[in-house]
Length: 217
Ligand code: DX5
Ligand code: ZN
Image (tube, rainbow, N blue to C red; front, side):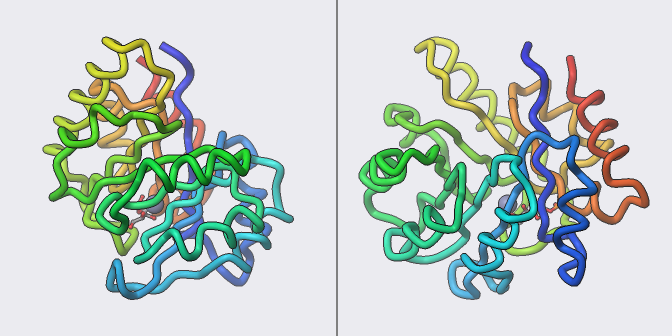
């Protein structure tokens, strides 16, 4: 098993001190950037300008999660802003494979994400992606309760990836904490997003280290 990847979500950071909060998790592997448009999800966060500001604050890979309608229209803004990964929702596009190819052609890793109610089976044959992000809460807000039933999708994905010898990484997002991360790791996740568990802790770097240890099998 490789070392677990920890991706702190800056949705739970202090937006008045975003650069300092990003630097407080310099020991994390990626920085997770949650983009919400108030349409695809019932909440607004921030957009490409703040993503570009995050880019200036760190050299860590920016793991950009687009919870937006019509991602085809906006994706180039996030490529220009300096995203290293762009993850869009399959529920928001008719042609995930073409969108992934467009993202990869720009030298950016492409991922797709599923809401809790969306089954994984239709997407198993088309794993031409660098990442799959399984939502373990309903997207839209930080600080929600982990949904363990979503781990069935992780197990199905892990089986498919292993059987076909693919390099696709499995990432999980929502309700990941010291209490839930081990079960997600056991189900087969490679990368773990955590917002409130890292940034509402007095010591974000210590929280990253603790989560990584708990996810190491
Ligand atoms: C939810 C976002 C998550 C969120 C996670 O829609 O995609 O990345 O920030 O927050 P926690 O870890 O607090 O559940
Ligand atoms: Zn996210």
